[in-house]
Length: 179
Image 1 (cartoon, rainbow, N blue to C red):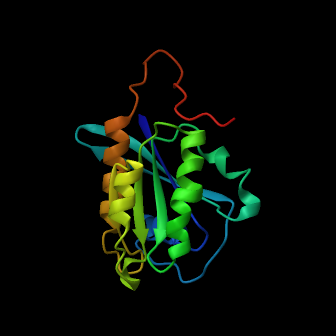
Image 2: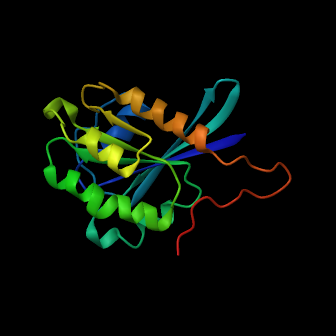
């Protein structure tokens, strides 16, 4: 069975864990729990193909910067998240997250995701997504579930579209190398 790996990155507190937790459990978490990294897996079908979908959460505290890239190898697509309520998290997309992913995983597709869309109106996200050549710009709320399923549907679609075909008799080709 083929695997699709989506990795979620963004500043601490933007709602990465809530995004993943709400999507995988249909429950909104009430407590904030900082983490180093966590992952979830489930079986999905896209067209006639069945995949194991791996969803990876990443830590974003300053002291975790050396561990975070360990979750990047074999990533098929990234979700770069910022919070509607945090202009600093939006600025860090171009200052931190985009450069980090381009350094470690050039060519791997990414989607720009505005989280906590129930808190306001993100007006600059679409413009930045075009500037950075994101596959898509999406808005969602893990709390109200608005746009939540679409984020993962689009992430899966991007991963499938850009996925490198794997040879049957050989080991999996490396898509992202951490140096």
